[in-house]
Image (cartoon, rainbow over all chains, first blue to last red; front, side):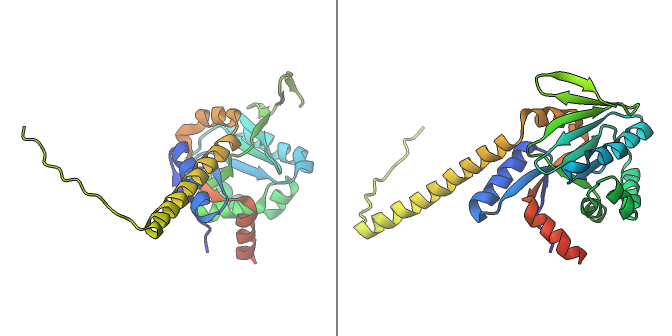
Length: 154
Length: 81
């Protein structure tokens, strides 16, 4: 059975819906963002950030776009800041779903990729995000340190 | 404009009925309090920084309410097996 999911364009509606479900049924819910135009990747292994960064840098270079690496409770999220056509978005995840060894090598959550292919859109949980790195279109990585400015690391 | 006719009605309730209504009201109030609490918690979980990032990409995204991670991962794994 597909777990309950509610899609809405407004953040306030999402928060309200999640709160109602929690208050009425006691089910804990999270708020996520979904897209069929932006590429999101999930990394659940904090120890393998370097591997994940390598893949994300290559993507930024290929698409000529900036990317963001966000730290979460359990790992990292990547957002490529360039919208792609829906068909290309689907193709990207379909290809990745057929290459589990690539996901494994670059610490990409393969289950997340499979779920994306099945649903036709990608979802990331928003809670406890911290912007950790900005990847430039050249592939250069800028570390963002809270209250200490930024520094280039690659 | 003609004055609206009103009729005053006095409802006499037994102590049991009063108790029942009070309990019902209390339950509704608890639900509302829980709801308020849940909204506050969820709002706090989304940092200011995340809101800024969402503003950049709002044209290309929508919001999804999903079950807490542990539950969903478990579901995905079961499906995969």
